[in-house]
Image (tube, rainbow, N blue to C red; front, side):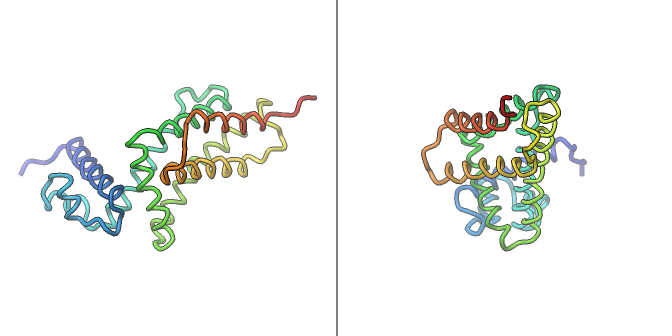
Length: 202
């Protein structure tokens, strides 16, 4: 039997995860069965089970997939740029992503992961590890901004970083609940927050 090329294997795994994400976003983790994923993907049961033994494996893979996607949103194109400019760009990326159908679908699954984290320690560890990435990135940007005199020295970077992540998590919830949401208005609010971090004029 010919060996499957790594790129072919990855593409097939991504195909399965795409189908699983569609099913999970549409009907939730507990209502979705492996049979639903098989039907959505159009692949054979043997193919699905060759990559994921259980539905729990699929759920954990969903968390990894989301964190990989968010890591890409957090990666500035020019790391040497003004840190406040980078924070503004990160905010824009996240808020714009909330207006895209694939971004919204990913967040529907993320919300279910948050709920699962209350009963499953492995998912809880995965979810909390996932928020440590953006928090650490924001802390570093704020500290660099302080060294450059762009952020007040009295500002506590870890506290502000957690607050920023909480704001974006709140926007996710509001968006999924169907509350009025405009990325431009949300970004204006984020800009106001960033301006408030600047040192007070002498």
